[in-house]
Image (tube, rainbow, N blue to C red; front, top):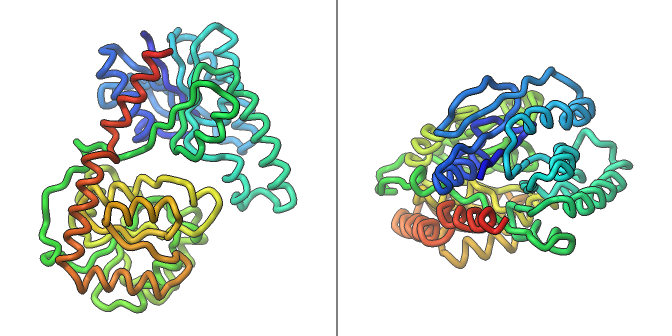
Length: 366
C-alpha cells in the first residue's frame, strides 16, 4: 500500500501529520509514506519522505484557488493508493483524486464553520452566511471520500450524519517524546508555562493580569503571537517583566521548559471553536507531570476533575486564575499528586500510541 499525506498550509514538521500519523503508518506498513508540504525542498524527515511544492506569496483567496492545481500535479506523480489530506482548501483536490479512482481520506483538524465565526478578517455581516455556506459545501464534499478523520469526538458527531466511515483520531501526546523524569515540585522555581498560539482569546491578557497578583513568579510563554500589534501591546503591560518569551520552540525545548515548570496554563476564552476542542497543550502538561489550570468548559472539567490533575477556573476571571496558581505554589505535595495523576492518565489513555492503532485499523479497512 502506497500512502501519501498532503498539506498546503502546515509545515512538513507538523506533529500530527508527519511525526504522528505518517511515522506510525510508515512503521506499521513497513513502506515509504510520503508527505507533500508547502515551501520546502525534497528531503527525508524522521524517516518520512517529504516532497515540497514551492508556493509564491499570495493573498488568501488566490492561494486557495491555486492549491488544487499546484498540489494535484505533485500528488498524481506519486501514484499512491491512499491519499490523506489535511486542509479544507484541498477539498477540490480530494474530489479530483477520488474521481481519478484513488482512495481519499479527509483529516478535519478544526470545526471550520465555527472557526469562521471568530475570524477577525471576515466582516461581521458576512460571518454567518460564509459559515453556513462552507458547512453545506464541506458536508456534501465528504460523500466523495473513502473516510473522514476528525481530531475530536465533537467534530465526528457532525460528520457522522453525512458519512458512514468517520473516525476521531485525537491529537494526544507521544509517550516516547513527553515522558519526563520525576522532579520534586518543591525544588522548582515558581514557573508557570503556556505553550501554543498567543492571542487575546487564548488568554494572553488574563494570564498577564493574573501575574500582577503574584510575587516571585515567572511565566514561560512559548509560541507565536497572532500578530505584531498584540505582541507590542503585551509588552506595555505592567507584568511583562515577569514573562520569559521563548517564541516558537522545538520539541526538545518544550520538554525542557515543562520539566522546570510547576504548572501549565490553558485558560482559553469561551469561544465556540474552543469549548469542545481537545488542546494538545493540556495533555502535554499532564504528560510532563505538572498540574493543569484550565478553563472550566464542561469537556475539560470532566478530564481534569475525573483524573484529579489540576484546577478548573473561569478563564475570564483574573482573580480565580491568580488564586489557582498561588494554591499550586502553596501546596507542593498536593500539586505533586495532581501531576502524578495527570501523567498516569496520559500513560493509560490519553496518548498517541493508543490513537495510532485506530488510524491503522482505518487504513486496513480501506
